[in-house]
Structure formats: structure tokens, C-alpha cells
Length: 167
Image 1 (cartoon, rainbow, N blue to C red):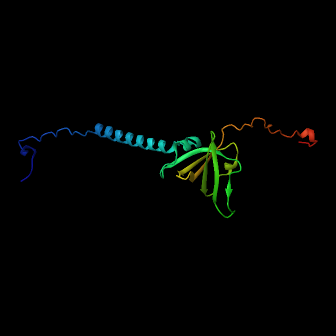
Image 2 (cartoon, helix red, strand yellow; image 1 turned 180 degrees about the horizontal axis):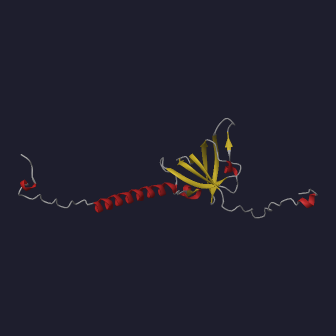
Image 3 (cartoon, rainbow, N blue to C red; image 1 turned 90 degrees about the vertical axis):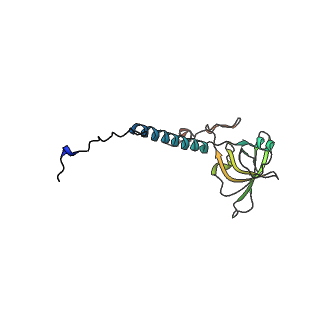
């Protein structure tokens, strides 16, 4: 027997019901999920990039915390830096800020600007109950403007005509 169009079934094929997830709704859902993901990643990246720290006087007033990692900012007390031997990387020093000071220890290589009197030093570590700040990381912040101290004469460039040098 050969199939002819007249022999089609009498019941028409029912049109399929529209799906809940149309193409437009799928795109909206994907867009919302992507926006939420980018928002979350942006928020966590911003939180990691911000850096909150205490000043030395705030840390001393707060007192030691049990094993909690904190950041503290201060300036190096002149003459307080000590390293037992040149082969040893353990350094001890003191930081001060607003009349308060703390003793600190660090095992590692210090940044070049650590000894600059105009630099602000940020330590990350734990403040022990004995009053010693054990440092895990050292950051040095430089002033955005390089200004001479009061009473300190600014650096004068040599005038080549005064020395007789042909420049």
C-alpha cells in the first residue's frame, strides 16, 4: 500500500503549548546570573584591595589580641633598628605614632625606603600579650609630596657658571 495525503489521520496534530522558558526569558535569566557573578567578584576584589590599619597609639590603647592578624602604621624610632649579625635576617625595631611606641620583630628582607625618616611603615602581623609585635609583612608608604623638613635647607643645584665649568 502506498501512502497518499488523503489517508492522513483524522485527528489534527495539536499545536504544542508555549514553553515557560522562551528564548527571551532564557537571555534575561543568563544576564541576571552574569550580572550577579560580576557584582560578587567586583565586591570581593574591592574588599581585598582595601587596607585598613590601626596607628601605633590605637593599637597600644586596644591592647594585644589573641592571635588576630592586624595592620599597624607608624614611623621608625631613630636608632632602634637592630640586626644581631649580617647573616641573620631577624630584625628588631620600634615604631612610634602620637607619643606611643611598640617593639616589633621581622624575619626577612626589608624594603629600601624602610630607613627613610619621611616614610610611613605599615606592619602586618600579630600583637603578642608581652607587647611584642611579630610582623609577617612590611609595607612602606612614601609621602605623595617630597618636602623638606622645617629648618632644613632645600637642596641647591650647583650653578655651572659659578664653578667655571662649561655646561
